[in-house]
Image (cartoon, rainbow, N blue to C red; front, side, top):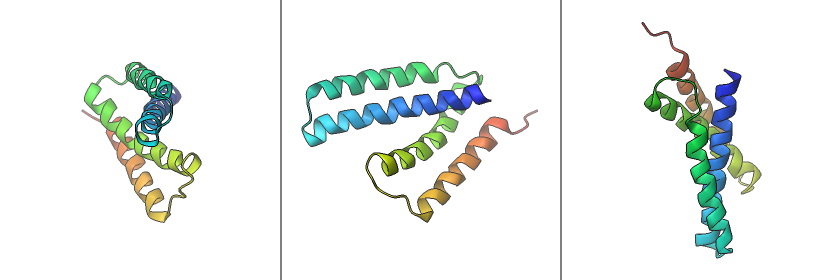
Length: 108
């Protein structure tokens, strides 16, 4: 379980970080090498996610979506300096609850 969570976090960091670098390049006029690094990070995200041990691609990516939401809230807080409010945290907790149901519910 620790390995799966670690992969979700690494994939999220690559996806959010890559998107952020491309945002800086295209939206804020930062140097083009940031866009290139962002593209590399986004490609790395796809590779990292493929190492998940869960057997179903769709289920893994759906569950990752919930983790991504939580990571995006944290990224916004730490990098963009936008403090999440109570509803951001409640929404993030709901997403994690959904991820838990999707990944660990008993199936017959």
